[in-house]
Image 1 (tube, helix red, strand yellow):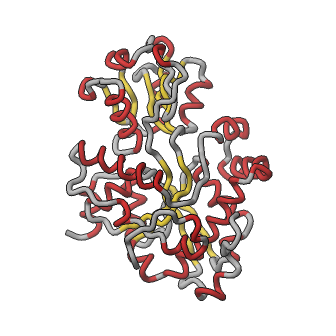
Image 2 (tube, rainbow, N blue to C red):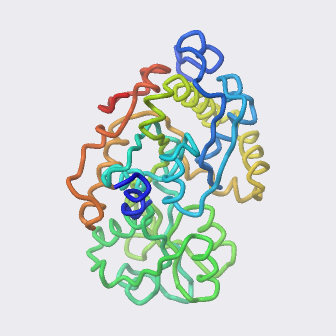
Length: 349
């Protein structure tokens, strides 16, 4: 079966000593390509990408032509990645896990951000949801095949709910918000900025985030139901054929991640992000704290990826679950800052 068909069949979705762009050419040679095309989205995991572009750090790394592309679905973005139409993709962790297990040749080369508290179950106030069991009586908008599917499954298991009784309506986030407003669904379950936009309407409240419950019986308690993180993904072919370009891209993004994570740069970065994305600055500031810009590979990375894979296996979407380190490529990051690689990947170019 060819790559395109296999993809469609898959159904988815500043430490000392670090090396930065500008010194890469002396150590690894110039990138094999001067062009870098990235799959792009609207949320803060793309702040480092924007900073690297705006500061000229991709250019310093050897990329004279940097482009961004948006896609209507993870399927299309992943297909473009494998086809070589983009070189770098930054999805949630569920789509690439599904792809790998369905024979699509991609590999994880980094973490853009940890998003445990980004997704939120946001419910209309007039639906009167105060207990987990109240979820049975409402329709929940959710983009099936995304990390929100795993969120809902984990939430159901934690509270002893029968997941089959939950009424899920498959909608992308913008349509979830429109349907919530029109009362065609009574809840949305997706990532920022859509929950915040729902709250701004005044008709909804958050009943559970990825890290916190707001149900009446355990209001304010930490209950982790999200294993979401945004990961940096490339095709295996790109990793093998363009090692210099891959290391240069990862290096530019690492430099930008550290800049974004520095509190001294917070106002500048938020303004830069809001201007580039044409988003309201107040909204950007309101959701920013949900994202942790941690580029490292550690035990938490492994746990998040393994639990997401376990969900996919339990739901019948993957078979013969692989060890996450078998499709994790840590060599580029280790070559830039070995202290960030506490758990080494097994995939080799």
